[in-house]
Length: 74
Image 1 (cartoon, rainbow, N blue to C red):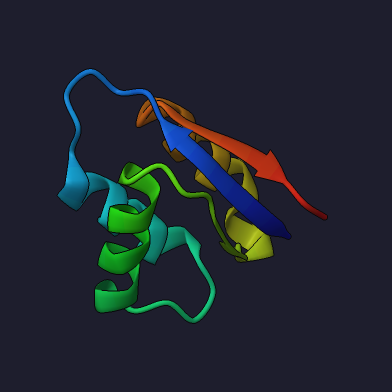
Image 2 (image 1 turned 90 degrees about the vertical axis):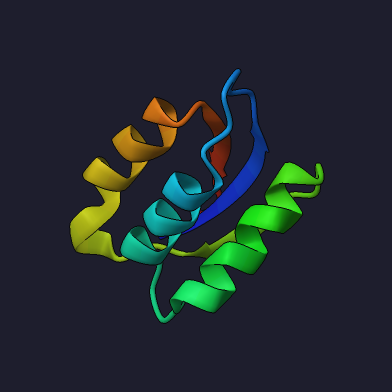
């Protein structure tokens, strides 16, 4: 499944938490790339990546918990 992260509306941003979440749910993304994706997202640009299919349900819950708006691409 491919997902597009659109924005983060959290009142208290947790950059490390967002980066850890991206690293945990994304296919083939390491910690440095996850942090870069977090920075891009917080600057206001969308980010897209592949999500492990076995983690798709928990991935979406984790994103909602962090107040991240997302769009499922396929």
